[in-house]
Length: 265
Image (cartoon, rainbow, N blue to C red):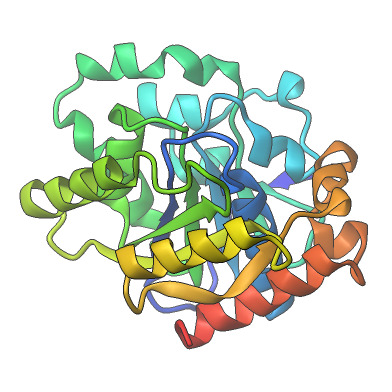
């Protein structure tokens, strides 16, 4: 791994926040494996980990303990994205990593001028280096997530096919509408992704129906199954496409990458 500063000839990159304030819904799993799928399709992708847990960072095999610069420095110390970017060993994927330094970042950010626009300003110089820039947000609707929404073109919302699937989604959509009204008029919902899907269960079908009713015409046709291999891949520091390319999880995220590029079916 090495820092990368080369500039590619791409149009202005699309910025997507991967958001759900409810934990355990497959948000980071999606951030890691969707970006890897897009990379394999020839798209140049930057993943910015702004979750203090740093799970996207680990999912790409980066040792959080050895970081000298991270997304914390980006948000709190004015570091440039170029200085923080690491080129991964995986095809077409760069990452701005995160570690636990980010845990107290929101307290420091409160004192800053234009604190909701810190990330948007930081991304401006590198947007035309990438096809897509993904922001893996923390499981909360705090100042870091507000920064992400303000910097984004669209929002991707993973929703698990379980009993409490819609819990908190009204609050999330209210926050997105508020950011759109006050800060970022172009912000739109990219789509809702159903995760931990098991078509054999009646509950799954009920949840799918509710989600489609709640988000008409905004639910990805691709669903992500609950599989052991998807759970194992992060401990090996590899996206599922590299850990087990023939697994159901790899096939699903590759299909999602194609649907993402072509638009929701």
